[in-house]
Length: 267
Image (cartoon, rainbow, N blue to C red; front, side):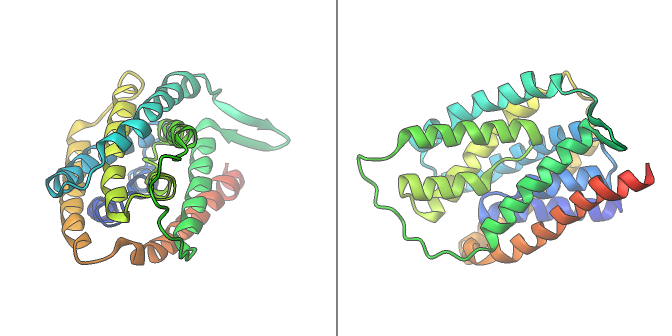
């Protein structure tokens, strides 16, 4: 099982390099179900893996001049506030049991994983759904309020469940600012790298880190994203999104069934 987990480490990087996100959608379930790590630690480790992997991918896009730093700043600063709010205010104050009555027992860990699965469902439907939206022409009428609020939302999600939010960032950059898909993917990776590392650092006093395991896993993900960035020059990531979306959908259903039904029966 651990060999399978390390294989997924490479896949995580590969997916991020091709579609500009999706790393945490794989990493959190891998940590939770293959390596049997608790949900809080799994989301924290996911932030590190996604942060390091995104940084490595950003270097490749930086050399290509594809990162829009002004956009990254406008979107990234509100995201940082959202991350700190989730990791330092919300998570520490969640009770051990969210629901513990009527024969139903939902622990904090189960609650986080189910929320993560719901996010996976939304992400999956977005990736599966075929849209032919044209890129909005850039103008002085850019809705910065919506852009900043979207950044804050992504930050809260990133901090709470360890998701980088690439599936939210890329569409926001394309539809709100009219940037090209390639530039959106590159900028998304840059934003994710900063957000994820801040989220991870803010949680170091809350979890115990196995650095040997974490660095080994992250190194394999970096290998994957370097391959993915190169493949992205020849393969349009948008064409791969529906296939990945079906895989994410299946994983989300598994998590929900396992947490809400199987664990309730066996507990």
